[in-house]
Image (tube, rainbow, N blue to C red; front, side):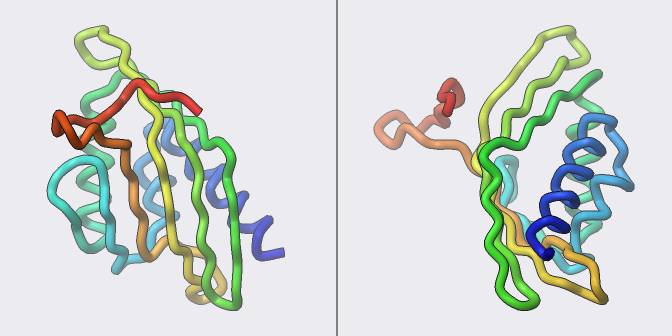
Length: 139
């Protein structure tokens, strides 16, 4: 039961991302969430900062495609962990189309009966020798 609820929450979140629906996107996150994202800083705290980051993303793109692939959900009591490979593709205001695969891990906690993300981590692989992100990998 918990796994199905979390999968539905993630699916609804991805739909909200594609629609650039900030309130729908933010409905996944706990107010005091901690995020390790692909954009600076190294970490940020709280839903206000998470909202700001998503608003910046939405402002940069005229359209966004977002696909969650290979979602794995593991639950135990009031906690759940998920991980997936997510494909992000978007059209920038300049008309340039960009896309990349990211690794997503999130910790959910059931708060007042609702599964919310209390921590998430988004990353891309790195070429340590050259100090660069590797953005052209595909699963």
